[in-house]
Image (cartoon, rainbow, N blue to C red; front, side, top):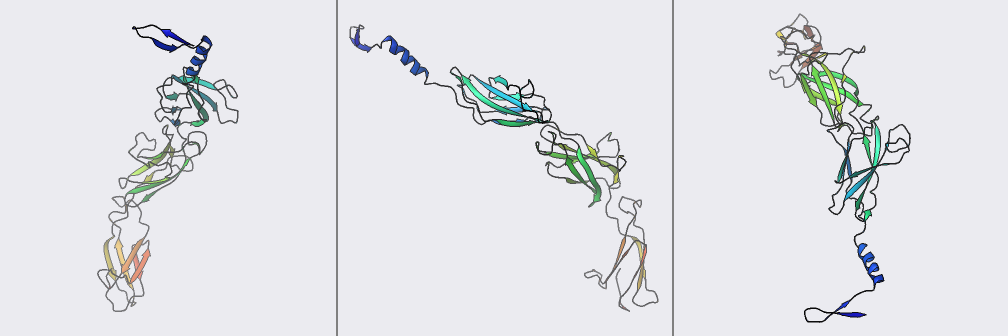
Length: 326
């Protein structure tokens, strides 16, 4: 029914619904907003600045009053996951006004599952899918330092094996991010004199140029996103630290002389120890000498070669009457 309202000297018609219909109209209008949808772009990572910290983030929405995060954790022992009440207990519910959560739960070597829902004046919406995060620790020591050997010119090449525990009690749950090789003149590593990093958790061999002639002790550490683990040292079978001397190829032998004995086709070549046998002095043994003879001073093609550990060698099967450079 229409009712007439007075105002400003002009008549205006207005429809006034019955009281029962007012309630229905208010209920219909209140449903327009509705509960918020599930949060979007949920991400999880371990915070490298803290030990055993998991950081969750998701897309911010201005119309959300707060977010609720449910968390259950398993310690890796095979017991059922649960909240802070222990295995099998109800999930922990954490409320936050920001679109992130930094979870300081201390569960070394376990895995926590998280899901998030958004809430406004109309209530809370759907949860996101569960997202797992391994709550780890820095990795263990590398399984072993396999070898440290001189290589190249004044280099040591170090080979090692990755840790059995990469941060969560196994080799797979947490990725390694780096390896550091440390060198010290002191077996106690009172000071680290030199070090090099791989920048990649999948590289198990590194080389570094070091002062020639010095003896270095070597150890290796692994890292994940949380931090650096303890070192493993290159050691003797009895466990004591094993030093390795940095070497370079020796300098040429000195005082080279050649003589042709009575036997035609043979030349005897003699020489003295190099002034530098690989460590700036003559302290490193020379393991072998190679003697080359050629009838061309440019040694474009070597006619005869002899190799051995002594300071004199006989070179056979030369052309009688030939002239050779040594």
